[in-house]
Length: 467
Image (cartoon, rainbow, N blue to C red; front, side):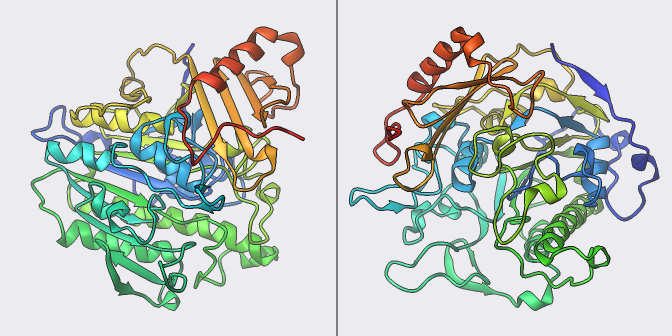
């Protein structure tokens, strides 16, 4: 049964001009045009790294305020536990088992592991919204292309305006892409920037978004803006702010991690304040989430800040810590204020939710279910299952990982000919007590889901035998 609990954060009533304070009283009951859509995606932000999700050390006043004046999901899941695969689910609405991208890299014909692009038949949110008259923009991390094929870049996948970086990939042929380099609509080397000018790279990305809102759109048309931030990803440590959290004496990787999150929070505030200044916030559906759980890279230890809350597992895990992520929703006058919902939802549900809000046609092949009724405080049937399939490069059989949520129960398997684990999340969110021996019915059901809720693909073959 769905529960809705009113948030009683005292800070929400004392929160000042440091960040946005969306005002539902300005909302209109009807609109002559569909709502604007602002999709905010953090990178490797853990379930427990926002104040509104229980974080006690890292400060996130803007996002905490957004939660208090919108809706917070306790049981929201990323589409996959790693960057590219999660984005593929988010932007296409196809589950990981039906998606062409199931890891950061797929298996090539020569046996190597290489990037896999989102194929044309996986219609993106932007491609879906353009026929509805939306202006579409993407700024930040795309990660759904192969670098040498511009047809796979964001500007070729429905975005009228895109500014994306190329990183962790090579030109074909040529050296690696230079990280402080951005590409506007695929024009190479079109934007270069000095990292020393900014507290963090996400400040630069927000500057680009503010310029887009001010100068690069038609004010009388709705827009879809996908802000694909990079914080707190492990390799984004070139931040100019050397004093934030310095008083704690933490190891530098931990200080930098916390600083990235607080600076990301600040940048979200700048963006929301710009929408208010332009008179657009009251007719904008805002969704904030993360692509997967917290990372263990660049010297950061997730347990230092309890980054995954009470869950176990991290980025690349299909335990709760790798896939359960924050989700905040705000829409003035439509989404009730200060509500916490335990409705189970996932990244694959974002596309159909946006489609419902915008009056757009859901593309073929979409697995997701709109959670707009939940946002509007209406009844909605419970979903039956959610499932995940993740492929980590390499020949270790445990690199093939599957999970399925079945009501309050969760099944997990790393490999194929190993025992399926089963957990009761209503009593054991940490997945510490395997009850598979007590519930053979759930083991059998999970096996069927793992085998049947997927399509075959050469880049991501089914399973590896555990030796």
